[in-house]
Image (cartoon, rainbow, N blue to C red):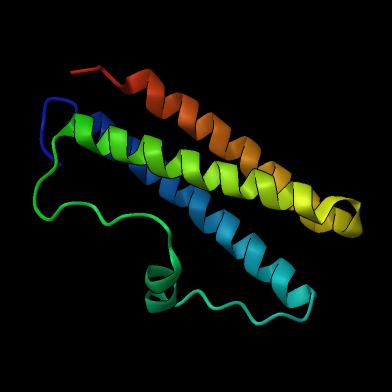
Length: 118
């Protein structure tokens, strides 16, 4: 990433990574409790994601914010939809997904607060 906002955006992305690590650990633990073996290998994640790859090379700070806006929006939508599908059939899993969706909504708000339209 390059641009005048490099340092604050870099620090913000580090904060997001901490949240993602906590969430994927909680999801993996929930899956294990349900008897499902989670497959979090990078090759599996890369092969199954609906998200487009980012461009190769340096990205301008505003491009990084736009990319995270798009990705967090898509993930938040998918998590919310999955929480609704689960419904009352599995309240602990639904509760976990609602908490993640709430966190993603906050992340999205914070990303959007930094965006300067160019």
